[in-house]
Length: 347
Image 1 (cartoon, one colour):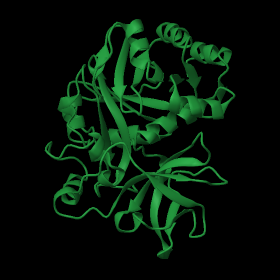
Image 2 (tube, rainbow, N blue to C red):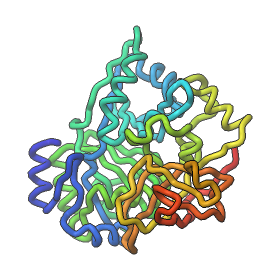
Image 3 (cartoon, rainbow, N blue to C red):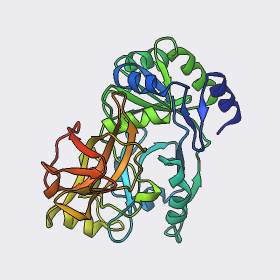
């Protein structure tokens, strides 16, 4: 993290863990205001991968689940990267600035993905670098977020995944239960925006921002779930993260077969659970009807202001509705399914 920016955050009361800002000393309040009010967050727990060079578009088009030709200076997208068996190695947001494409994903996933992508560059004129320190990365969410950002930047994107950018910043509208945005900018601009927002919005840490992502039903891959799911299991096609018309990429045949020929047997659900431990990605879920085998795996989790945790979990479709589901063991804490903000679509 930029040392000047870290010092600013420390003065603002930020408490840090290994990946970035965890909270500002009152996590229950941050969780509550994230759901009900206006918030902003440092998102340095996410990393960035920069891909540039004259063959960058063609290279990415042959690697990712989504159609890279739709990414330009006004449009970003969610996308995934699969192994040859169609299992997700990563999910990320991709945007373009100048002659570079940027992949935004959890910081702990950056090094491994760079290593994997570089294996397939071959003779392509492409450079792949860790660009995590290239920008200050902020998130803004709330009923007043659009108004506040418009007063600062002059304009904001109107639709989800749309981008507004100029010499000073890049602003993306992202999915959320309230109007939500991510900003990539420099230290001076980030400091000015922070001080402007701090008048009637509250700073939150990574935990509360994770809560917002889960409430929006946005999947993410972490080291524990690498190669665990095909894209449709995480609902990636339902949040515009998969193109079924773009052509070949690693695992494309399996992803297409799942969509058009096979019946999807697992997909991602949102649920609540009262647990004595913090649920972790990859943790197994069990059903009473099949106590000897896993009924699914956890994708992500965050504490909820009303108590317990809200989670995203990939579950067997046949056993999800009406089943007694438990976290970690057949006698573990029960899961209660909740409605996602988008409808399921059958493969």
